[in-house]
Image 1: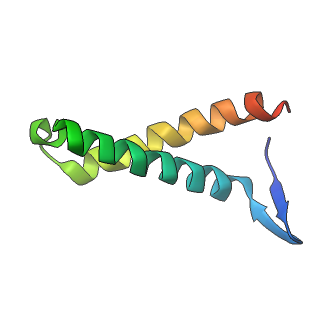
Image 2: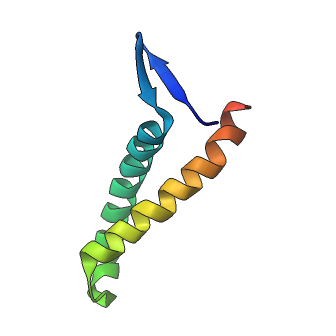
Length: 70
């Protein structure tokens, strides 16, 4: 699934779509981790947030073709 997505006549790169989905999921996960108190155990919070974004984006990129049936 490499290419573009047509949104009302505007071609958007699929990587941008994956990044937006991953950013939304990461924001929800960050709220959960703050509420649980996970960040008290972490040395460098921005680095953990970046790594969570990358991991979730990889999961979205791997799972999205399975969900939409391509």
